[in-house]
Image (cartoon, rainbow, N blue to C red; front, side):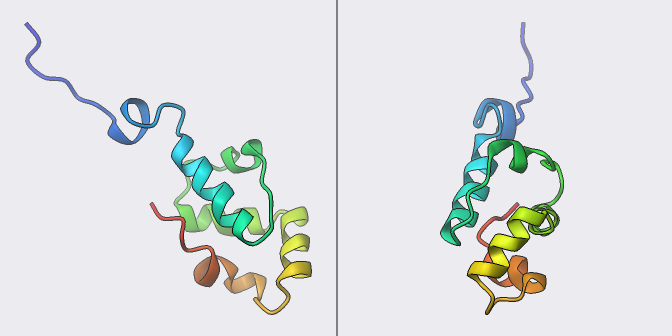
Length: 88
């Protein structure tokens, strides 16, 4: 007889393949005109979200696009003030 079942709601049971964070990252960056590949996003999955965003903003291609299109928003504060829609 089964007495207990333990499920990982955030990953296996509800979001197999961890699609929700990928979609959230894609949407948040797309809002600012930056298209991200799934491979780029998955590269640092597991970090807390703000660290993950900051790390992606350091990628040369992403940083160049951000600075070209959003020169009025300093890259150093982009994660905290503008991409904060991605939450843990």
